[in-house]
Length: 116
Image (tube, rainbow, N blue to C red):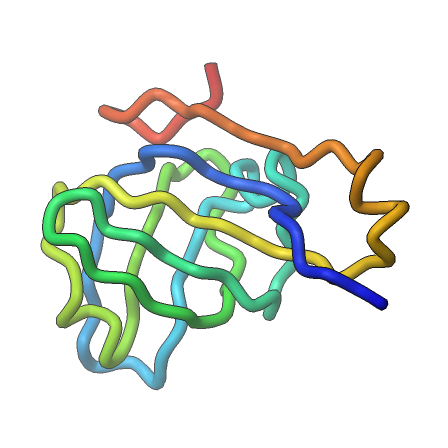
């Protein structure tokens, strides 16, 4: 039997853009992605701390060092620029492996989204 566990989390990053005129997804600074072990096209859950919205989408790699956190398409309606969000990834694994698994939690600077 497999269970889903938290694989990684970007905690309290600030939304820098909301682009309604895009097909969909979330664009994340490539440096943040690497730090949190997130790959392009990976499914993520986005939790908005300001309004309680939760959504699932996939990741587009943003410019390294830019601090970009951009919700695209319909997801842009769920945030406002300046909102803080938590971005969570999950992994499916056997329960015994899950008991030993250590997720990666990243806490960037909330004003710049830069790694500290």
